[in-house]
Length: 228
Image (tube, rainbow, N blue to C red; front, side, top):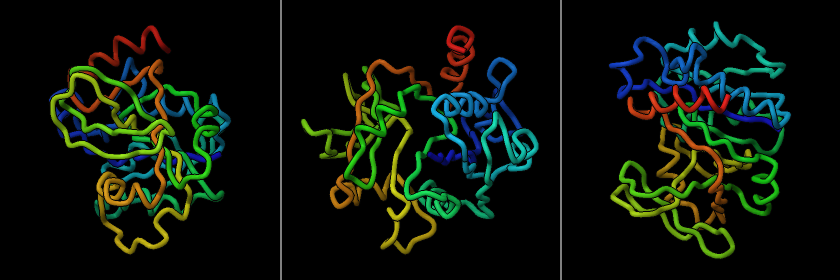
């Protein structure tokens, strides 16, 4: 299998702590966050990673080069910001098989990818979900008893909700009839989940962290000492 990692993030909210590097290169206990994602993927025999890069891409390219941890790397370069959807669409051109994992470069969701793959048959896309309590930073996703997504809810306070954990499994031709090249993947999903027969697969017991804000960045530094 192959995986796309969205690694072009600027990291505006982390600028007070981490300056002058792409957000996925933020150091966690002397290793870039992105390296932890590579190590996670290597456990599942991922042999080809497409890094979608933009802002300060040279820092990522210099560190990971063309191969890392016995994983071949292809760089999909955004010469201008394409949005998450445009970045994925461009990166899919580098995928050799008919489907790929897609991961956010600023989140780590330690799910079993084999289980995710097994649960993701017969639909164009599946999203790994995490149940969270007392949140307002994320929107939520609702599913039925067959794990088919039934709705997306805007960001607001939720006592309990399923959130998008930032890992997808999708087919390479997901954008075959979609002509835009600059767009939000989240908006694309909200407008097309029914046609795609999108599924949400729940992984309640898996560790999840999003380093997008300083408090969670600091939490990752503490957590990773025990986890990794």
